[in-house]
Image (cartoon, rainbow, N blue to C red; front, side):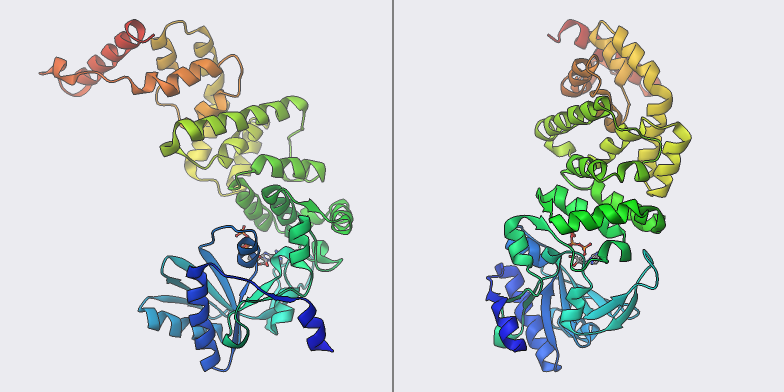
Length: 404
Ligand code: ATP
């Protein structure tokens, strides 16, 4: 009976060659030790979506650390065991592998870090967040490439749905509320009807505020890295968690328009300056935090462990933005535009471009003024500060006279 049930949900899938190769090796090592090994989680989802993957998770029904150690020996590379979690990391041929012993997780109270015990593959998949993240592929020789999909992940992937595995999922771990919206935003998926209901109900019961702040902030940080961060923010708003996360921000059509303008600016910047491509999520965040009082914004940046340059940029934004905006608005000559923007962080400049009346001037600075070069031969004999000043003066002369 059990086998018949499983069969109905099994099919073979073709793995990308670089993963197939290492998968077969792991399968053989595991078998030699009497264990079974599987590719699991997000990597299976991404392979089925045809995405390229380099971070690859395997689980082992047995001692994953031993399997990782033998794999590392075979490739003569280092391996990093974490015995307290039953996991190990190995890098093989550019792939970052994580091998973990299959485990079950129980939550002592909602939002807490779970208690972990070793268990079967099925239980390991059952502890996961969504059906599309709860599939496995066997790398064992007798059924290599077989998709193991107990919960209908493949169907949901086709129907473009995020679905939890059981009704208490969001209450048990409220971080999944944010994860659901992150995946929905990233992939352009919807929440299934029941998942949507469960999510709304967990939110209205205060699940977000009951979860440890560090875990929530960590998830927001991951969302910031997403290409479609703005879509994720929209979903935060739709499901009423935006105000809980960004306390002190009121969503308004004006703010929304500004964020949409920023999206266009970022697209422009990526195309124009591919070598300068950066973590654009921080720019969205800065635009959002502009709405807050400086102390609140700084506290948020501390909570999210923002790098120091983000905090510096925020300070410049809150304290220096008005004077820069004023001098830029009044600037008539190219050199005046240049002087207003020189040495300002790029993130700040992109943020300034969201203001319609300043956009063209910042664009001129980014596209032309900052690249004006002078022939230093002209200033032979000068050095240090004198030379610096002469160069700057000459640059401004060129931009005012020669730049169309
Ligand atoms: P990404 O593409 O963002 O790395 P991922 O699916 O690989 O996505 P990870 O955060 O690396 O996500 O987690 C790996 C897997 O662990 C997930 O696919 C999911 O199966 C499981 N997982 C992660 N976080 C949770 C959670 N909070 N609750 C349940 N399962 C989780």
